[in-house]
Image 1 (tube, each protein chain N blue to C red):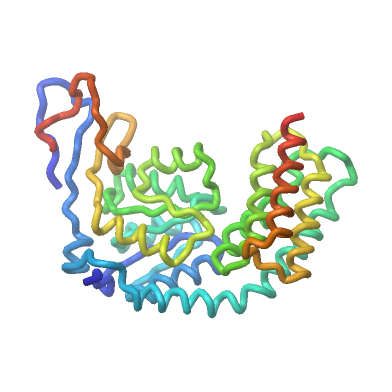
Image 2: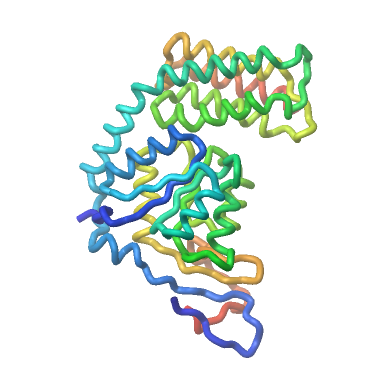
Length: 168
Length: 163
């Protein structure tokens, strides 16, 4: 590691050049991506995706149960929706990886809505419910999110609903 | 010719075992034979201290020591054995303030969830092929946060000799 060395004035900022140990380890390369490696990885993800479907349905059912357990009030403090947020957060990450794009998009929208609120702010339970219903519908219908008009309409509708409520 | 990743040692940190499994499958398909796992930041730091990997891939939000705290320990703790290790932070939190928080604590690359095979490959190769200088300031230690050189008209405050 080389550093800037001593200076008469106190250093405001020091650059450090770090030896590239990784490059030494992987040898010469840097050409186009290893197509075989990428293909193997895609195949591996496809295999995992086959197991993801049932788990995704289970997560959506758990999320729905959590929603049913929320107090029957029009506005609910965000903290009481933490379980719903956490499940949606995991759905957002996993569903997209395994090709369940529409579920990932709806989960991401739900996270965005809850994330836009302060800890003490209240969430409009109708907005949360609309996302839960959408997730259940997509799961029941087996929609994958490949860009159909109905799917776009669903995402646009949820986005508009959120905006309308947040702009109030 | 592509890089031979066989000898690369990666530590993956995520509290979702399924994400860990996906990461493992992808990394092994790339030829990486040594992939370790931890489900929280504190456990990960212990593993990092005992056997520093070549690359750390960590989630941002975890119960029991989150990813940002792990990055802070790796970069700043006095007992960190390899403070300049490349760190790829993966997160579904892609809001600007979250990404900036990751950058400002010393993350090397940011990987958005949901990730794809190509995205993981790109971030890995970036850490190898385009390593970044490190910067030490009173308030920051980590990779140079500037990705490109721009025309700067002000005075030079950096230590030229260090370049």
